[in-house]
Length: 249
Image (cartoon, rainbow, N blue to C red):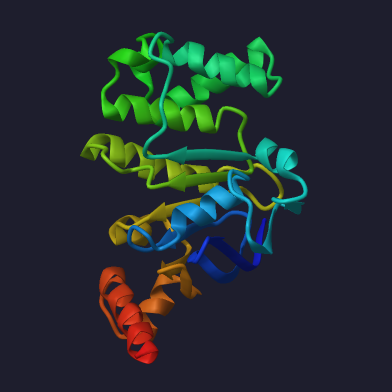
């Protein structure tokens, strides 16, 4: 579903991503972990065709992000922590307008909105104008908007940032449910970017740990804990980072 080979992104003399390679499969929740500045957002924006890689390659479900960006955009949904909504429209109107962009009929749209209402507890967000939303209400509609066309690949970039405990729980439950749903023969792929290690421990099947643009490891969380001898992912992350920094000295 996702194939990244020697992906590098530079801005002048600054290297945001340095020769990153990994693959991710259908049916996975695949975590991208690391602190701010690790390169997570640069990587996800490249996969979403918002940035062009300096070198290397990346393909999503067989479509090259550089050569076939329109095909990639048709099969992905993207959520980050800073997305806006048109204040004058209700949640239902926002979802209807995006469904129209994907060629969905009115009947398909209303059925999909009802399904997402049940899964995300959209409730009154559907009929209240977005300008009146709380942060949690806003993020629920942002997520629903991103998956209105039932994308094969869902990209969540710090999607839980700023959410209260109830909205965060709704998001994490949705991620787990989304993995269980089947878009194709092998299921969907969810890319879950976060610097909150406890979130990754709950929802991710495998994780890639990034630090200063470099890929430190790709593995299951139990394997990472066993290899580092640590009791939780946060401690394992620091062990991996210290090892890289020690070798660099």
